[in-house]
Image 1 (cartoon, each protein chain N blue to C red):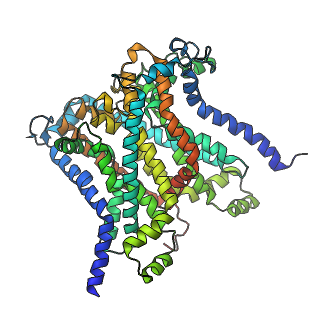
Image 2 (tube, rainbow over the protein chains, first blue to last red):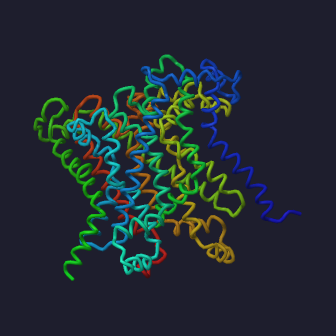
Image 3 (cartoon, rainbow over the protein chains, first blue to last red):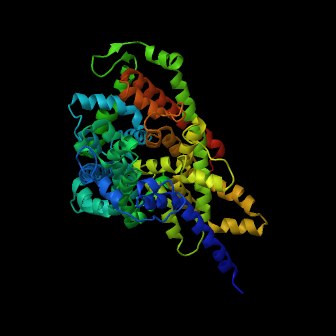
Length: 280
Length: 299
């Protein structure tokens, strides 16, 4: 005779497994379809297993657009992701330390402003920012996408602040007594201790920048500058050639870094979402 | 002593100065500029011309697409947000059990949400719902008629709503963390007193989760109002069929960067800002009637 909890578990696992597969089915379908010949993708949409199993879609898709391969697009995306992420995470940590640990006149005012920008839709500043950057001559450069990141990002500032608050202030006091200045306190003591929060911020920044379409769509017009998202969008626009297979294959390629990072770092992601959402 | 205090204030400002500079340069001044632009006629190539309230008047009384777009967006928000939150809560409750290996499910179920905003997933979604797509095959298999998802404005909008519901992961994780904070003793005590599962859900789970529900509701409402990529990719930037998926941000984008009506686009942006701000304030205002804070005595 099974115990009550064992019986529950026997019922529970099949149920949740079926649900999980159902949720993942579209992604599995996408991956499997990328190995099917283009003309069979919809004719055999009901079967997951490609027959015949081919790699041509990847070879064709990789050739890219306008004479530039997907390798170029991936390289472009990595440059933007890296520059924007380093800037956003480091500047956010710097700002978060100021908000979390220093007493100064007007702190709550600026904190409120910062929280308000957290909820500000990008669409609201899209037009005037475009005009600003076009007047600076920044169109067709990555500057409009990368530079604003170096001035902190509200979500990361808040996330890192929440983390700094869990570090005992006695540590600060001891360091100050030992003759540590505020900058040293930040760089030598607080920054190393906030590594988990910095990791979370890095991962989120990576996702948002990797998947961003609006920025590249507005500011990058030459095929040699395309990011992966933008290249996929252009692929779709040429869809009349109905080369579904190649488009699916490159869609899969664009998801690979995201999924790999997700499995390596899922602990940080889960904690980041849970804590920033709860300790508000 | 005074000099030292002043120095402390200054140090604070040094640390937050990147935020202040960035806020002024990339947010505050652009927003103010956009307010001014909304009263002008501006096409990016010739200097702005003062137009008074023409842009607003045109949007409200001439442009039939504008109200269409507002209606589509409100329908989208009204269905996508509650459905996503209900789904997220149900899955969170399903996963809030002390079995081993639960984190594997949690990880896999969250996966669609992490890739959900990408162009690749929008392309995938587009093809799942095609005339010969797997969704229609499923409908036929279950004995329903296939739906022409791209031929009917309502069906096309539901395609976007379903995509939003499928990306319930972030809300689910936040609910899950909230559920874990509810002491098990509450449920035990209620069970001893004879409360059934439904009663326990409505009397314990919902009230204790209400602060988290408020947070999710506000964040997801804002996110829904600014949904761009799915609408842009799935209907190839047009918002069709018959403007059925012309979400507000997509129309704003088209106004500005397809037709170069920067003045009207700025007016639309300001209206969006007002609506989102008002709605957030409204949600906060109603929260006192339904959000329950456990430490009411303290704070």
